Image 1 (cartoon, rainbow, N blue to C red):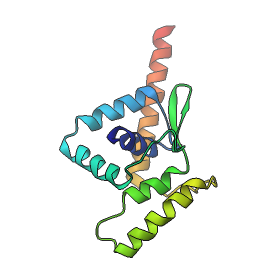
Image 2 (cartoon, rainbow, N blue to C red):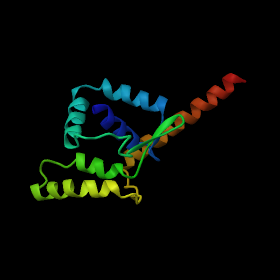
Image 3 (cartoon, rainbow, N blue to C red):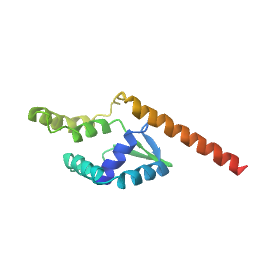
Image 4 (tube, rainbow, N blue to C red):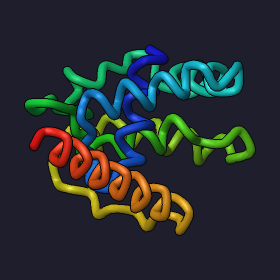
Length: 140
Protein backbone atom coordinates (compact mmCIF):
# COMPACT_ATOMS: atom_id res chain seq x y z
CA UNK A 1 0.00 0.00 0.00
CA UNK A 2 2.79 2.45 0.86
CA UNK A 3 4.28 1.71 -2.54
CA UNK A 4 1.08 2.83 -4.26
CA UNK A 5 0.87 6.03 -2.24
CA UNK A 6 4.51 6.76 -3.01
CA UNK A 7 3.96 6.20 -6.73
CA UNK A 8 1.00 8.60 -6.75
CA UNK A 9 2.88 11.27 -4.81
CA UNK A 10 5.88 11.01 -7.14
CA UNK A 11 3.81 11.12 -10.32
CA UNK A 12 1.80 14.12 -9.15
CA UNK A 13 5.07 16.03 -8.76
CA UNK A 14 5.88 15.71 -12.48
CA UNK A 15 4.53 18.47 -14.78
CA UNK A 16 2.36 16.22 -16.94
CA UNK A 17 2.01 13.42 -14.39
CA UNK A 18 4.20 11.08 -16.47
CA UNK A 19 7.52 9.63 -15.35
CA UNK A 20 9.75 7.07 -17.02
CA UNK A 21 10.61 4.05 -14.92
CA UNK A 22 14.20 5.15 -14.28
CA UNK A 23 12.98 8.46 -12.81
CA UNK A 24 10.35 6.67 -10.74
CA UNK A 25 12.90 4.24 -9.34
CA UNK A 26 15.31 7.07 -8.57
CA UNK A 27 12.69 9.16 -6.79
CA UNK A 28 11.42 6.13 -4.86
CA UNK A 29 14.96 5.29 -3.74
CA UNK A 30 15.39 8.83 -2.42
CA UNK A 31 12.10 8.70 -0.52
CA UNK A 32 12.73 5.20 0.82
CA UNK A 33 16.05 6.29 2.32
CA UNK A 34 14.79 9.65 3.61
CA UNK A 35 13.87 8.33 7.04
CA UNK A 36 10.84 7.55 9.16
CA UNK A 37 8.98 10.74 8.24
CA UNK A 38 8.13 9.54 4.74
CA UNK A 39 7.26 6.04 5.92
CA UNK A 40 4.98 7.39 8.63
CA UNK A 41 3.33 9.81 6.21
CA UNK A 42 2.61 7.15 3.59
CA UNK A 43 1.20 4.83 6.26
CA UNK A 44 -1.11 7.59 7.42
CA UNK A 45 -2.19 8.43 3.85
CA UNK A 46 -2.74 4.76 3.00
CA UNK A 47 -4.91 4.33 6.09
CA UNK A 48 -7.29 6.97 4.73
CA UNK A 49 -8.08 4.79 1.67
CA UNK A 50 -7.61 1.15 2.76
CA UNK A 51 -8.84 -0.41 -0.51
CA UNK A 52 -6.49 1.62 -2.74
CA UNK A 53 -5.37 -0.09 -5.95
CA UNK A 54 -3.89 2.50 -8.28
CA UNK A 55 -4.06 0.38 -11.42
CA UNK A 56 -7.47 -1.29 -11.15
CA UNK A 57 -9.10 1.97 -9.98
CA UNK A 58 -7.67 3.82 -12.99
CA UNK A 59 -5.52 6.22 -10.97
CA UNK A 60 -2.29 5.33 -12.77
CA UNK A 61 -1.88 4.14 -16.35
CA UNK A 62 1.05 2.20 -17.74
CA UNK A 63 2.62 3.51 -20.91
CA UNK A 64 5.65 2.18 -22.71
CA UNK A 65 8.61 3.20 -20.64
CA UNK A 66 6.73 4.76 -17.73
CA UNK A 67 3.60 5.48 -15.73
CA UNK A 68 1.16 8.39 -15.86
CA UNK A 69 -1.25 9.54 -13.19
CA UNK A 70 -4.83 10.20 -14.28
CA UNK A 71 -7.23 13.01 -13.41
CA UNK A 72 -9.13 10.74 -10.98
CA UNK A 73 -6.19 10.74 -8.62
CA UNK A 74 -6.86 14.29 -7.36
CA UNK A 75 -9.98 13.14 -5.55
CA UNK A 76 -8.16 10.23 -3.94
CA UNK A 77 -5.19 12.37 -2.89
CA UNK A 78 -7.52 15.01 -1.44
CA UNK A 79 -9.36 12.31 0.48
CA UNK A 80 -6.08 10.92 1.79
CA UNK A 81 -4.76 14.29 2.85
CA UNK A 82 -7.79 15.48 4.82
CA UNK A 83 -6.28 17.16 7.86
CA UNK A 84 -7.27 16.01 11.35
CA UNK A 85 -8.16 19.64 12.18
CA UNK A 86 -10.93 19.50 9.58
CA UNK A 87 -14.36 19.23 11.05
CA UNK A 88 -16.03 15.82 11.21
CA UNK A 89 -18.86 16.83 8.82
CA UNK A 90 -16.32 18.01 6.26
CA UNK A 91 -14.44 14.72 6.49
CA UNK A 92 -17.67 12.75 6.13
CA UNK A 93 -18.71 14.83 3.11
CA UNK A 94 -15.33 14.16 1.45
CA UNK A 95 -15.65 10.44 2.15
CA UNK A 96 -19.19 10.38 0.73
CA UNK A 97 -18.15 12.23 -2.43
CA UNK A 98 -15.07 10.11 -3.21
CA UNK A 99 -16.81 7.02 -4.67
CA UNK A 100 -19.11 9.20 -6.76
CA UNK A 101 -16.22 11.29 -8.06
CA UNK A 102 -14.04 8.26 -8.75
CA UNK A 103 -16.68 6.91 -11.10
CA UNK A 104 -16.78 10.11 -13.15
CA UNK A 105 -14.40 10.38 -16.08
CA UNK A 106 -14.47 14.14 -16.61
CA UNK A 107 -10.95 15.57 -16.47
CA UNK A 108 -10.06 17.73 -13.50
CA UNK A 109 -8.23 20.97 -14.30
CA UNK A 110 -4.68 20.99 -12.95
CA UNK A 111 -4.03 22.77 -9.69
CA UNK A 112 -1.60 25.66 -9.55
CA UNK A 113 1.75 24.48 -8.33
CA UNK A 114 3.98 26.36 -5.88
CA UNK A 115 6.86 28.23 -7.47
CA UNK A 116 9.51 26.07 -5.80
CA UNK A 117 7.94 22.89 -7.20
CA UNK A 118 7.87 24.42 -10.69
CA UNK A 119 11.50 25.42 -10.26
CA UNK A 120 12.49 21.86 -9.29
CA UNK A 121 10.66 20.53 -12.35
CA UNK A 122 12.46 22.96 -14.65
CA UNK A 123 15.78 21.99 -13.12
CA UNK A 124 14.96 18.28 -13.48
CA UNK A 125 14.03 18.75 -17.15
CA UNK A 126 17.22 20.71 -17.73
CA UNK A 127 19.34 17.95 -16.15
CA UNK A 128 17.63 15.38 -18.37
CA UNK A 129 18.29 17.47 -21.48
CA UNK A 130 21.94 17.82 -20.50
CA UNK A 131 22.25 14.08 -19.87
CA UNK A 132 20.69 13.28 -23.26
CA UNK A 133 23.09 15.70 -24.95
CA UNK A 134 26.09 14.17 -23.18
CA UNK A 135 25.02 10.66 -24.20
CA UNK A 136 24.59 11.80 -27.82
CA UNK A 137 28.06 13.34 -27.80
CA UNK A 138 29.60 10.25 -26.25
CA UNK A 139 27.85 7.99 -28.76
CA UNK A 140 29.28 9.81 -31.77
